Image: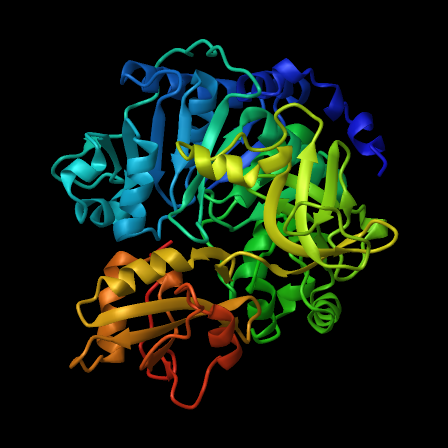
Length: 537
């Protein structure tokens, strides 16, 4: 794959030691000056503004007792303060931990126990999720509330004002952790992926090269900033000189109007977002926008054709993950429908069997990856050494994805090898959902798995076994889950069975349940009219 784009823009000439938040902010402020770097809400920042923006907030964090290596969590929607926190932590050498705003109950408690943040930035509307936890589950963290002019809740403090002067950059290297991003576990609790400064730089650089982004582009995203995609989008801006436009949330009815207002030329669509947009009534703004390309997981061929004909642009597919960054792709002129591409410069990819032995082309197996550029992949799972060693065994990162390699090196996604689900762009741990269901006094056994959705990806289905003498009520069981699970993880389908199919050593045969699927006796939450409200914004 040609690196002409990166070379032409000087992106690959940045020294490794400068591939950090302080290094990039200072270098690009000098390069791009008063050009607009980001628009978030009604606030506009130029590249020249960014070092001061990060350094004065870093000064406020330092004055509040945050130092190098300390974790600062956030339960916050797409607003400027969250971006400010991430950049300030990067400037100071602290670690930002942006949490999924839908996290509730045991999942949220686990993340906080694992990260042990010294402080938590929380938006008022998400404060209740923290208040439901025991004080000891918060670990003594200071709660900084974004109350937007309203009275502060008891036990919270105001988000400290930015310092009057810039804090000096910390002693930060490209291998130091910038953010911990929690990705759902597959057979256990969520894992905190340690993403170093150098990984975010390389991730942004590779996507810029694939999408042929330059300083004239406007990168519009309505994906949440606590996910790697929207965060990486900012680093695409940082390395290319483009403009970052962060919207509050995805709205199918207003997507194209918002994209037009943003001046978008590139956008990001994951999971079911494309089918959802195609279900909307036809509107004139669908062809009045300036979007030339989208990025995400490519839809099926028939949906791809409909999208291109109706909206005038398609999805450029690649393979990217929180742990690996952007590892596979193909230039726009070399994209193939249904293929993720070939290894990016500096990456190696193999397809292996259960013994890590290479498989021939055309045979499906697990995708494993390795990088030669320093710190261009995650450094492990925070405070989970056993999980880290297992994922990076034999010095290759094991993705858990089943793929097939064509004879010319293009790789195609087949399915996930792990026991996880993906619903409308959100990763879901079946283990976590099962633990909540098992906490119901009337449930003796539970298995959670994915079944096909009409919008693509998965719908969450659970098979449960009632305790002897108990008559389980479907809606009551769902309401039991509501305060303990993210809304997107709550099962849509429920089967109440006499027993679960088990292997000889007592493990649930989930493949049997998946093959059984949705049957005539299956209870459908949506058909029953039990709808769940998304967290606002």
